Figure 1 (tube, rainbow, N blue to C red):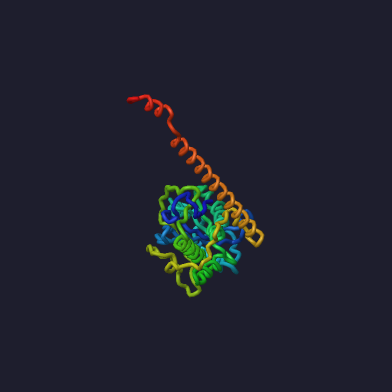
Figure 2 (cartoon, rainbow, N blue to C red):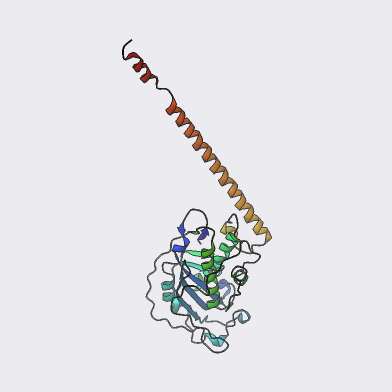
Amino acid sequence: MGALTRRRSGRCARDLEYAVVDVETTGLCPEQGARVCEIAVIRMRGDGTVTREFTTLVDPRTAVTGQEFHGIADGDVVGAPRAAELVAELRSLFSGAVLVGHNLDFENAFLTGEFVPAGLPTGLPGLCTLRTLRSQVSLERYSLARASHALGGDWPTGQHTALGDARACAQLLAELLHNAPGRLNYVGPEPVPLAAEPDGVRTKPRRSSAGTARMADPASRPVPVRELRSWPGVWRRLELDPRLCAGRFGAEERERAVARARAVSRRRRALLAGAAFTAAAVATAVAAVLARPRGGVRFAAGLSGPH
């Protein structure tokens, strides 16, 4: 898992490419039999330009539960591809990119459980926008919908559809990089090219209640959803450690992360002050040596010339 930081380390995040992924599933835990029933991927650049979108329902080979959340029924996935059939397409979408998800741990668990056994590589670089927002900005709530509304002013459309949530996550990432008070750098595993030969994979996009296919736009466009907007003044003075920004992140977890950031800042200031003092002491010592009278030269000069 990588991270974004305002410190002077890593690579400029706007120079990278990203593959924003979202899945809808039949449950919460793949270890307990939950399976992917829809997936979407948005390939985008650091400036927000979307170069490709992909979405399809997925046949989970089990009963589709959780309809109250995602609205997908058993009949919807009839004729949809299985997870293994999508691996070549995912390799192409993920190649040379940083994987992104809002709570990427969730998506990663299902990618690992279903797509890795079918040939998707492990250890791909990732970036969690949930942890990143908690680390960089101060909000009351950080869910995808609430963060989108608090920062961009609109509630995202297509909530609890893979494509709708992937677009909302991509919009958050693009606006995060656009609004950052200074350059954001990516630190973490480097993106890697993946050998892939997509063979025109069979897809079955979700259909709306009106019966119109919710197709992904094949053409590139300058923004994921809408024009990038300016965020309110919510940036943290001290960024938090993303490793402390996972899970529930209630009041106790926030206080712990803030206290840790303050302690790290104090230590950094002390180290800088110590380094500055040492440098000043060295400079003073060097200046004293250079200004010291050179006795041998003066003695020789005193012996030369007439008396």
